[in-house]
Length: 288
Image (cartoon, rainbow, N blue to C red; front, side, top):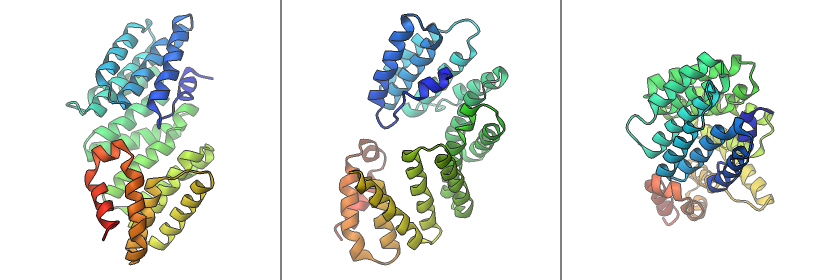
């Protein structure tokens, strides 16, 4: 198993604090003798800190990672660049980390590190203006599909998803649906139940945009039933069920579902901070 795969296995992006603790354990192990992963593990501690919006801690951790770099260790140097870019992007700093991502792309391409090059290109597809972002996403997809590196190939679903949302935001719903379906097929092939469910949600969301609300509602209800069977709820699924009902003219039926979606999504601190208008809309539709 590659160091890349070892570290990826420690991630739970829904629990950055728990992920940080696992990576901190990997750092301590590395300090006791497994130095090949020390700098890499430190970069992932920094990434987890950044996701918790502890940006100064993340900066210091990346300084430690840079100090732990071994001569000629291009892979770890690329990861330092990637995580400096991600911290800058999450923190909303000027440039959003684009310079770091570009440097990571160039070094990864020259070093033959396909998976890291794809990661850098996909981040440029996030932070660059729309026209340039589309070019970077296309580069990322081309490399992911042509590479013999399984770690690079695993990016296909994420890139397709990013490209799909970009086309959806541009109201090109037909192309968006094709890309969402590519992402779904990849998630199913990877046997990743959680991300497969998210991909199914995205396909259904796009179906609603295409005016196929009956199909979208049916799929979202299937997702809700599957979650209920394992004792889970997802406010985003609830929200979409309500939106589909509203689109179909079933306002009275939608009202209590909107109210439930508001309650469920209010618990999402990030959404509450990032999209207060969205939550307010759910509250109003749940009352009227």
